[in-house]
Image 1 (spheres, one colour):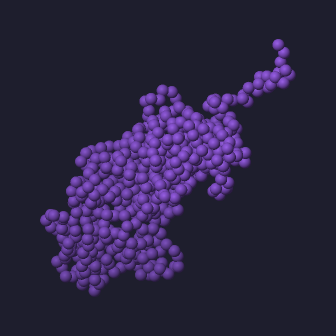
Image 2 (cartoon, rainbow, N blue to C red; image 1 turned 120 degrees about the horizontal axis):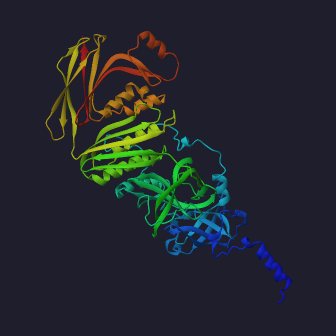
Image 3 (tube, rainbow, N blue to C red; image 1 turned 135 degrees about the vertical axis):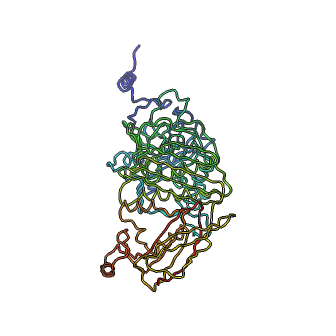
Length: 606
């Protein structure tokens, strides 16, 4: 039997180049050397496929049809519009956790599923072009990972307090009004929400954290721990596989789940949109297991958990995240103990991050308290946070006691603010080696007001010891008299009036700001640590005697009782960093009550 010449020629082509003809019915057989298709080659109506995980760790195929290309939809960035069909997509629409799912046309990678539309009934998505992702994420110079999440200033705003006398201020976490609303009424392009799989946290803590995480496009979801007994074979981070950014692991777990877009050796890129848009990062990267797809009219989501940490996420940019397999991130060991209605302990690790570490520790503390204590009613909360800092002999210790009516979280938020202030200081990079927090909760109101102040003498002489009687009125209790001994300075000038004030911590802090403001502006890291640790304790009875002598503050240090000649010279140097310092004698006496109020009296020096 003879073959026509054209058939023989065609047969030779098949024998010589078999790899060229990869059947579209089995796109998973593609090797890691897939080539790319640029945006200029993509036309409406072109059809292809995508890869993602809908269940377990099996990579499945869904169909894709190109609707068009949005040129320059963001500065120097294009977006490919596609309609996805197949598997569960007709019922679920775009699924949170699909971010990064690779899309192919003619077996050429065009990009990653990354964006969706509010209230879209169909699975219509925006695809981030692969060339932009690769050029942005894999061709960057090495940076110092310690510069993760820099803040412009070391001081963060204080949170609101459950006290009508205090003007509400911004908290460490934005309120619901301050966060972007992913369910806004208008239809707009937004990054596909990334599931934040959490375990060990009660629902109340997750609800309170939702405004913070929503501002970064994260969708908190209660899930399982960092293990899946149904995983029988080692999982790999290949295109279409689920990938997780691990934030917390141990007794508590939290991880953000997405999809791998492309792998090049040990380097992978994923998500197709920012995780936190933090630039250079240092976050553990793990495989993930999908238990189920939760279908919803608002946001369908993959219910997943991380499995095994295989590397590190080192870039978080506008076009996605990049990680390296075999390179591992540093995590901070944490211990939280709650002593209250029940005694509970949590041991876990948190990601080493200036932004996320204090947030995650606070979230863990809130979860521990919410899991064991009542939500409504009065209580006193004592908190002690100890952080061991690399290179510092003494640990950072933040300690105070608070009265709360209902579960306000103000006490924990205040401690976290101080901790965040140290981590984000402007003086030096901080490496925390260990965090230990103890929370003591008393299910009763242990408060007292400062009701009266009395001194038996009508006048005093230099060197005299004064007995200052302070009357405390406990809530529903009998009055208590505290006697405090104070010595009048030997060099007190006759004829001067000494002002004696007994006050609570809040009023004492306000006096400090007026009388020695320069001491609240640290100029080096050591001063900052002292400032952060020296919290005015809410259970301290503070007695202050204002003297006629004045001093100065210079670069955060107090210089009291200066000779008049030196005082005059320093105040007229025309140099910055010099501020007023009023002479004072300050005595602090611990009590078992959270105090409020103030009383003042004057005495003549004779």
